[in-house]
Image (cartoon, rainbow over all chains, first blue to last red; front, side):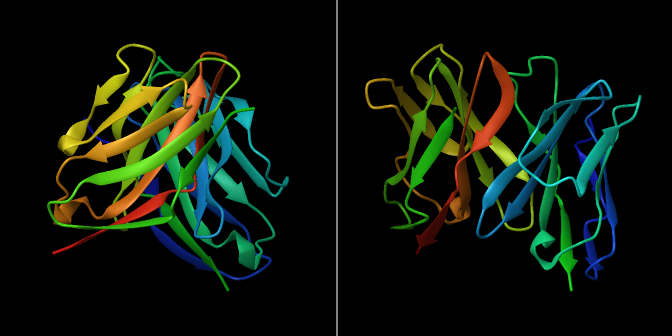
Length: 114
Length: 113
């Protein structure tokens, strides 16, 4: 079956702009998580959605937001971009065994903020 | 709060040598532990996981890890490194109380011919 799909794969924005990233989970997966990956901070948890509800949230400012649609597709939005937001944003989905189940990752969206 | 510590941000081995990547965890309740691998320009892929069954866990590509509660460790090993093992490896922890997966800072493995 198809894996986790993230779009776009690469994008360049300037400071102050906003960006929306999209994630389509594996068919049947209702949980979608977002992570920010940077060389200095590693993988940091942004938030997780399950059945259109945000279930967990990391320690990121309110400029970072997300949502999940009824078909489990998820989007994350970053407003008022800062240089430090340059990162690889990874989306992951998992099935019903949310604690012990495997996270399936997409290839990420690489955001560069100039 | 849970956390994982990966000792050594970079590890270099020769092809055919033993690979040992270290991970120590902190958790107030029994943990579930994972190792993921990330190849360049790709997402993360699960290598193996420990979920309170056998303490020695075998994964893909010849990797294995042993859960040692007394040492709060979950080190990743492979008897003989291959050039294709060069990648970044992440240890992660969660538990039955939460569905948030916490990752370590990663260890980049280099394999020399």
